[in-house]
Image (cartoon, rainbow, N blue to C red; front, side):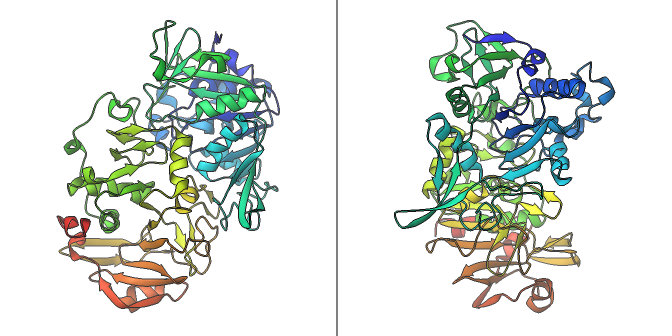
Length: 545
């Protein structure tokens, strides 16, 4: 039976040089109070130190914690800060707040939301590696079952391939997250298992036997697999919760981590330790307690984001299962909702949400009114299978081979998240982003105008890091690159302009601002002028075609 302890007592259970596993996405599943206690113990005593941190997704708030101001005052480490107004960073960033030494090696699918650890990685004070999110999440299941690792085609030709970069995100990292193997005549990547010593998890409610529910979470994270893997390796499972209930009062089907896997339970005392998402403490429409009227969802203003999202929405068809990424891609859901077609598609979020209206930052990973919420690993089984009809994802930079980088830009490390997993199998892949960074644009009356040219090229000779490999794309995949100025399609391995925006000149506004010469379709079309107007109403013309 689980033992109930304080966060400070939990911090004492983390040994030096251990492998520490965590689970969740955004702030859902993140044990903030226990993490702060570990940070404070390290600042006071130098222990625990040199840990290897394993996380499967973004665990932080992309800076949205800055609304709480202040940060952590190192002069007050003997009095752990429980005042939410003083919070500057949340999530795994807590493990970097006291400086180098606590973490030695960091594995994640996405690192950009943990600013303090990211700073240490940029200074080469810790080793930093990235894996595809679905691989990182489902590798726990392989460990739990006693298998040697995960064999998959996910990641071939991208930066996690050992022939490219091996998942290394900084100079300090010298190893590789995968190895190439051949099986029955096919090429695969093998991601080896590891031995977790401790895991820190979070649920909503624990009963007196340590059974854990996720009833108030927006995401059913990989906590069960992490707990099973940790116990299989003889490790310690610690779970932070918000509420304690009497034994026998949790409905059996609401228990996501059984008490037989839980060693210690910490009931949070910090009023800001159990945020459901980065931008909201608790939204019942995210976790299924209510269904929010969709007309209450704000409309997007007319700008380049809305234009791009509208054009991406034109690739959706009636009955599609569609995945939408972070940033501009997430706005496609709002367009489908504005145009009255959100109920004609099924949105699929890599966090596990099926149906509903996926949300952009600061609540990415959550969705209003999901019809189903799968566990984190289960949704990647679906995504890896190729059953998804379409995905729309961000475009950081792109090169002449159709490669896309979303994971590393000079000193700015981000990681791929689920990007590599999703693009490896989906039949229609739509990348979206602005054509130039930092441009000033105007939209209206069915056209666009460049007020001031941008300073950052997005279409370069060679991307800095390969998050999507144009050369490894499946022959059956349709791959498009949507910007506000034009639309590219990868045709026979060649980046080809197939549409151009009204008001844009190919020779003046597009070709001079690319580091390579694309092909131009002999049937070059004009982008729908309606998407450049305040009101559109034209999605129905293509939606059912």
